[in-house]
Length: 170
Image 1 (cartoon, rainbow, N blue to C red):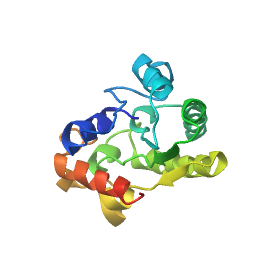
Image 2: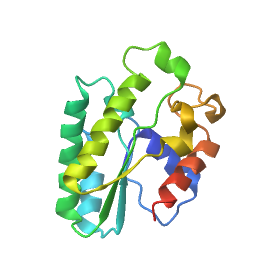
Image 3: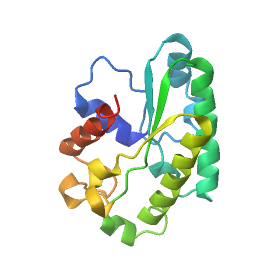
Image 4: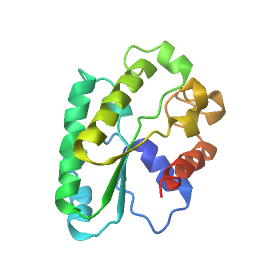
């Protein structure tokens, strides 16, 4: 479940037996009212559910408000999928250049959001996956090798890195 980055993972990962409940511009406010997401959660049975949001929420008032809205989604998923293992993934950083030239989409905000996600995982009993080391290395910024044309999204090679990070949790 996720936004345009998850949509990229869907398009390029080759995971044909997985359901991707994602869309460009989707965020924590819209996902809980999305008819396709709600229908899938109510009618299908999932063993594992991976959730990745955060970049579209970086303009929100605080990391605490992000955490609170994320909890609403987790509660909804738990309601309809009580036996599923839920994974929340760290917010993937943007490039250093994009972060340095922007007041909203900054990697400092990404880090503060990720601290709240880690807390939320502990509080709700879901699993937290820090995918940043696999995607970004020690620098903890989206590297130039990701081929990002907008500072936010990345190329297919990095979608496979992301997939590797997810698969390592199984």
